[in-house]
View 1: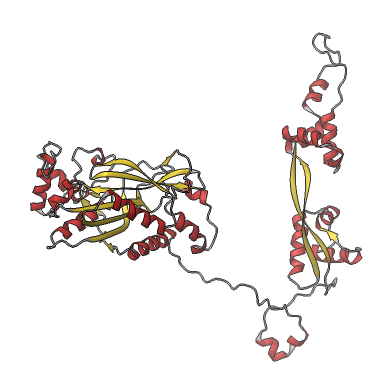
View 2: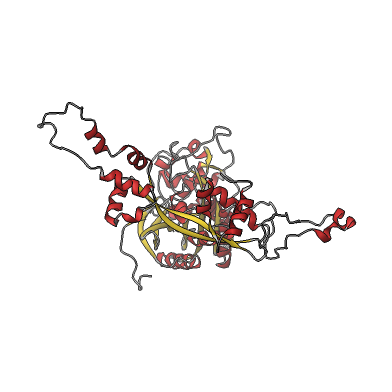
Amino acid sequence: MADGPVPEVLLRRLEAADGGLDSAEVAAQLGLEHQAVVGAVKSLQTLGEIIEAELRSTKRWELTAEGEEIAREGSHEARVFRSVPPEGLPQSELMVDSVEDEVQRRLQLVQGGQAEKLGEKERSELRKRKLLTEVTLKTYWVSKGSAFSTSISKQETELSPEMISSGSWRDRPFKPYNFSAHGILPESGHLHPLLKVRTQFRQIFLEMGFTEMPTDNYIESSFWNFDALFQPQQHPARDQHDTFFLRDPPQALQLPMDYVHRVKRTHSQGGYGSQGYKYNWKLDEARKNLLRTHTTSASARALYRLAQKKPFTPAKYFSIDRVFRNETLDATHLAEFHQIEGVVADHGLTLGHLMGVLREFFTKLGITQLRFKPAYNPYTEPSMEVFSYHQGLKKWVEVGNSGVFRPEMLLPMGLPENVSVIAWGLSLERPTMIKYGINNIRELVGHKVNLQMVYDSPLCRLDTEQGPPPTQEAA
């Protein structure tokens, strides 16, 4: 046992030592936990140049709990043999005359610190049986410092008024100032990483000449959320299993009725070159209030306002805001997430314009390897899913949806027949989309971010597709 405080004992042993001491050996000699000696070393380091300590790492073999039991009581095989009664057993039942407990012998060698006497194959066999494990031991090599002394005097860290008035500061040792040490950071709040990434997305839209749409109404009518988008009232997305409907107030009271009648006619009878859906469209269904399921409802409102301005003026809109889905919560789904949406209205826009705008948009995000896949949406035709090749996951990951708004949606609003509207949407939380932002979040939040944790989190909704990596020409 240590004769006195551990730091003082360590200094006395160091004074008598030739060169230095190993902290693990000192702990074994004093019968102490190694951590107690490490604590003494760190305590002495705070007193100045009394000692020098070099951190060293060594590997050694240790027995597992089962290994210690076998080293103490013998291997399972040997114990079975010793359990044979003194009167013996018939030879037909036991064909062994004696056993040598080689497993116990090997484990006792390791226990005695002679693991080097075992061959690599022998250690490997014991490790496979989970009797032996290799551990890394971190120790300190302690030697005398430039101000070595066996007496410990506490260094002062502050100059008090009493020391100045009495003059005692002249005889007291002071701890040197560490001018390179970092100060204590003041406690303060931080912006959420998604808010910072959202600001980056917003800046990209503004650089491309887009105007932000008002999206401050989380509560929306079914008319703007579904009917205005030429989405039929019997569509599965309008079921309570997919949408949060409101009980109070249950219905929207103010709707543009002239526009409502045109939408009703398009749904139930057709028009504008379409035969419609041929069903009995109900106003009560359109009035139902809900938590918006997408920000396309805000796009519909913006396009309707644009249609009322004469003459027509081309426009580019964007929005980034929260939407809600009646999802079953699991590892990859939440009941709310943030949707990013871009809309361009102009004369004669085509699918080629949409692909060009998408490439420009994603290039500004640092995503250049894109490919497009035909898809179906009730309110866009043609429609495309956008995929990006993710180098980390080695997969094509869906990063958004896009399309050209249908005439059945645009013409009832009052937009001219030769005006087309291209649009795309994506989730802010999708890992491939926020790759640009997540790589900067390491700096934004001031610590490392585990990207795989981000990929596996409920915020990330991964839709992947198999396929070869992109060629240089495709990229």
